[in-house]
Length: 369
Image 1 (cartoon, one colour):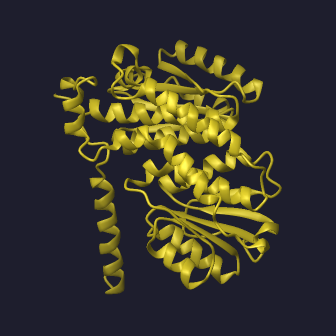
Image 2: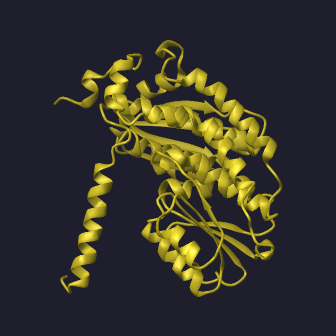
């Protein structure tokens, strides 16, 4: 049987990369630091009502690449936020959502049906809404109901707009006083990613490029990404990037929870030990017991003969650690896509699913089951 990686491209071959990446995703990955700076500058100009400052809860609604920005923001600020911050991935809202709830609708396209449904419910119960989108129905909803809209432009896919979906979210919470300003950390994170882009970018040969090296190790494996504390949602981001860019099976687990269940599953099926590859995301700013658990988990993976690699976060703050570790994942998933022989921007199966949902809607309206 011929596998896609049996004739892998040379990651140092510019022509081969261009052939598999006609939409130029790599250019937008490299440009992430500028996206972060642009998002922070934009949100500083957003007009937000003073009445939005005393909500009892913050609920962020989104899916996929738009939701991960909410998750990264939540894990970053939950220790200091004066009110609970939760992320909703779905059509409905918790029963507690009402007039004293701030609801943020995050949808890159503005057409995400789950987010639109949640937004309609939020309007019914009189919640205070903010929209973050490039347009579409979410923007229309904001204009017709006169709630604040943070509208941005971006020429790529939702997963590539992670700088906007995260930093605009963080900026809204900062502007409303739910968390302290993170302006210094945002700037430092962007500067750090500039440096990392020069280390991990496509022109750096495999021999000196850790992201290309890790992608080569992941070829033919199921990727399992482990992250603890505020790195857990970075692990989720890695999982999504491996799925969407590299078109490969991938999953994520959270420490310390996985130490109470997942590690007992390392035995069977026996073949999984050769098929799986674990990436551990490490931050020395996490709780010290998480670091101890990471070492113990690595030992158990070694005992089970599971291949593994550790990615160390960089910087001086949790925000920098999140972004630096996530940035490595963006490059790794991109290079793995090329090694798998696929276009990282292609979304054919997602479009098939959307067509199926539209056909189902039509059948329901016609009374066909």
